[in-house]
Amino acid sequence: MPLPLTVGEKAQMKKKHPCGGDVFTLERVGADVRISCDTCGAQIRMPRREFEKKVKKLLQQETEKLQDVPAEE
Ligand SMILES: [Zn+2]
Image (cartoon, rainbow, N blue to C red):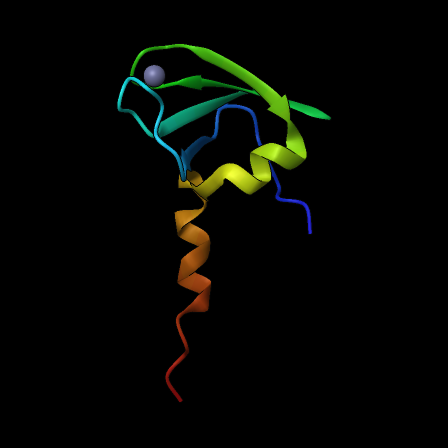
């Protein structure tokens, strides 16, 4: 299932960038994804499928987790 990706969204990757940072900002979303390292500013481009495999979590989807909390009866 494809991840809903939005430009400007931040993503934490499974593997750290050589600079030590693991948070990236989505710069462009399409068949290819371009991300920039929040720590050093380097830009990386990769196929979307590869990005989806490498991403650990999207940091602006935190609010959606609230929906997973079971409602009290
Ligand atoms: Zn970096």
